[in-house]
Length: 71
Image 1 (cartoon, rainbow, N blue to C red):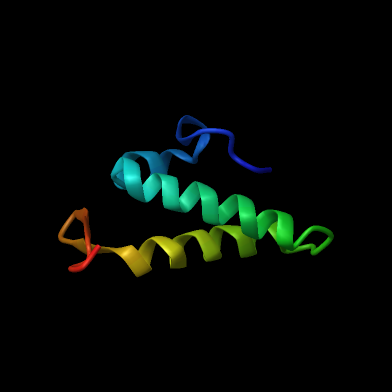
Image 2 (cartoon, rainbow, N blue to C red; image 1 turned 45 degrees about the vertical axis):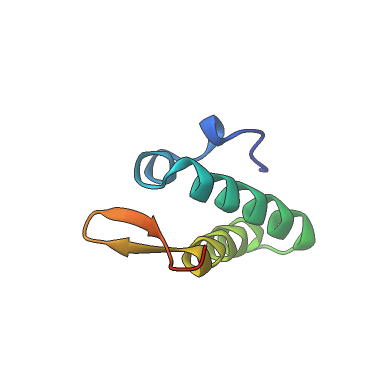
């Protein structure tokens, strides 16, 4: 199910990622979810894709997600 806003994201995403990273996650998830319509693993693929998108722009330092240098 696509997410309409960051408030609809799963709690672990909302509670750990900064707002901009949440935007990246939501947009990547929604795009991947639509692209894999009909696949039995659609939601799993979308979550994995969304985390990969976040990790391209953010990195986890300790307990916090921070922008990668250059972003």
